[in-house]
Length: 568
Image (cartoon, rainbow, N blue to C red; front, top):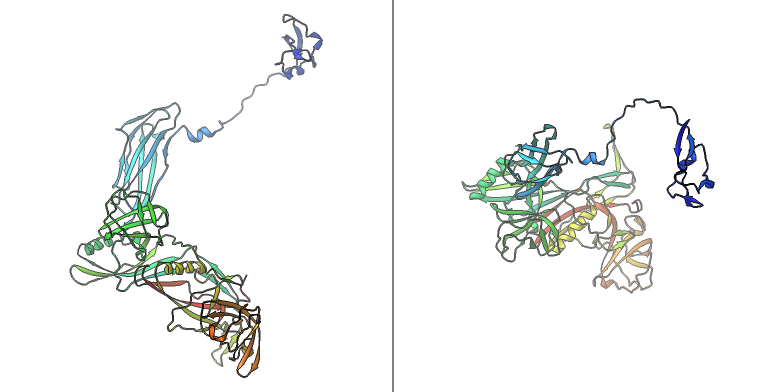
């Protein structure tokens, strides 16, 4: 036991005179507060005892625990730790900060060797060797231009007197060359959108479809005629970077500057409707040797805002294009026509995602959009497809088994587009269909049925010229939904519930609801069957005869689906 001399103090609350008295006093031999001694003076002493265990010292192995300070300090730091320039469309400068994160230790920088790219400029804030006080930060300026190898892979080392503090800044990116050789519009441009769909088909004709690409691959095929200096420049460009990535103008989305645009401009007029994208490229071009590209920071209804101001002045009429990153699929086929003129066949494929806002038709029927644009008339093919199998042992007759029990009609649909609005509407539809994945109601836009009697406003049947419908279809899937189009543009979509023969020339079709107005056969333009359809291919071609303010044509093949087996 250990004897400790102490003074018992008291607080004013409940006669305790000291508010700071600790509860630890309860651990002493006198384990209660001696309230009756509260009147003792400070000179009075009370002998109390506390048991203290005998000391047994021992050695303990331990390591220092790390805290957040260790994560940020006690080293030299680079901000950013790596410099990724991305796609370099014009000369750029970037700031890099070197921070001596030692709270109490100075550092001395001896050298900053750069390896991997001789065309990068490094501007220090002073002469070397350079002293860093504790916690001091200094700024370096890194300049990168378009001159140099296509791929940027350099290392900027910071070498200190204390070699343990050496740090290295990786610099990566791609110098993007602009493909400025314009297409020869005599043959137009073929743009191909290629989706990828996994289609699992059952013997009954039911399908499960799964998109394997988030956005389509886009390719462009076009011819170019080059002469004089442009011809020589193309020859050197292909020599220096046949496999490089190019900034390729989207030729059919051209617009032109309405007035002189001085250097230092950041906002350019576009007229709207072009495929300019935030983070994408805009290209100003007069010829293959006079181009400028800049990143797009914002897109408005009729303007774009550049991330960096233009470096040159551009006259009125200069072509302004949205551009994408692309590569040559195969080396261009060059034909030398004369010593100064060559022609080239060029095929390019996008090297970036080519997203576009999908726009399905607004009209809905039984939960699916309805195609409302009739095809451009012409020699449109309409082949039939069968779901089944062929059994052939090569020694006897073939056995052809139709497992679905019905035929599946394929049909072409052709567009001849004039104007930017029509062009953008078709592109939105194609992105909504996503190749073979999505299905919509698609009228045949043919006169499949001919009405022979007035349809009453409240009638739930219509009489048509006999074509064998009651015998062959009679409300069967893929032949039970009709679109009644009038000459005034009115459209009624109904489902056939059944059919009966009236006489040798007439059949009566029962429909699911009345039209609500009386309709005379003379005002009916056509009655077409509607079927649920998807595209029959993932590859879609748009042929641009001119830019998108002019004419574009497109022909697709669609395939009928069993609406009763389509997942809702």
